[in-house]
Length: 500
Image (cartoon, rainbow, N blue to C red; front, side):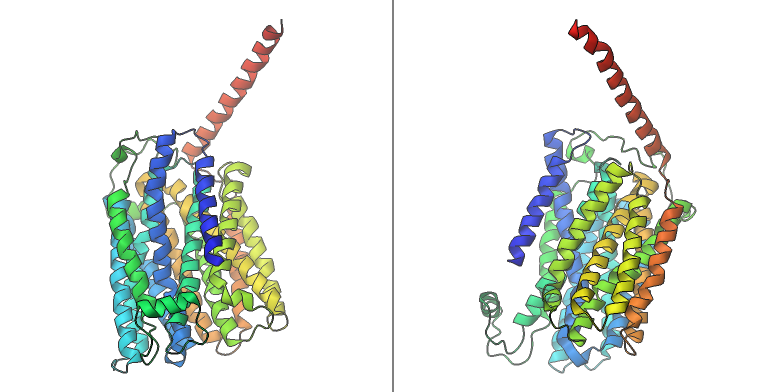
């Protein structure tokens, strides 16, 4: 049922992509652009599976990886993820998004294979080294390569999507994130459950899975498959990316076009890595986006990873549906939120990204307070609030890193701008991971309380940048409005003549 629902959702997303064509691109162009972003998008989704499989392995390993160790491992990886954008953002701006996504999928695959080997040795009592330190190092390597994914997909997007289309692409980007979360939590958990040494009343999937991997009759859990399977999938997408993706329309035998972002009229400039970083860090709007993304990192992962652990540790009678299908809830809610906020940005706020972000941040603030008030009294309310916060925070992330950073960074600086802002997401993620890993050992009430001030900060910054647009975008919108007015006047002049 869940797989069918996700497949139907994916079909709907593809339908909406072809339906939404405000610039009236040719059908051939739309098809080629789909062939370009779909493999990149699915690669990014499975990168998420190869990222959050750590959460699944934590629950599967039980006492071998406690909450504090998990917090330190995840925190180390996310901090490396955030800092690595100082290198790979400018690098992807030089080498292009196609090479960047290949580096991401191949590198993450190798790192996951290494984590799988360590897990195998650990469960067979052949790993004499410290678990926390080993996983922190390997997970940090994984996250270093993972960080190439987002900047690469946004780099390619910047050349293929006009600013008037980017709100919806931000929704597509959020959809891909949501699919990745579904793959990580639901598929990952299904792999972990089927890999146990003893499975009571196995489902048809579990029976087939255990036969394929010859698990029946073998002692101990095969938790290492949580790492090996995503690694194998990523290798397949690496080959498809290298074959299908083109960095620009011109490389796919179409004409390049002006996307009217911050690079309009500046495409002839060439920047060194130092100049690229300086331009991004000196841009006040990009720094405000980075601060919003920092708060998003705290909030999004603060709920996405910790509700899964909370519901395992604190029984949630009557709300088991949230835990058992956590990945599916995150997937569907993220898609709905992404398209809602993308549509609002493009159509209601004329390509301004901050107004819907401010509204979403206000919603997070309200839900976090309700979550705090009902944490131990209403499991269903807790589940609904967790899903709602995830919906809104994924929406903010898809619009800020996936769209706003590209708008204000422009095609020339897209990877660096989106990389720096996405880096702040994971600096926030690292902060919450280490903090909540420690605080929740004392009381789970610290969990929602920790999120509230970051929601307030996100709303404050979004309101400060409420009316900001890149100058090229502003000029384009003015010109479009003038054309619309002229068309109306022509109709008004011609119509009386036609009547006569």
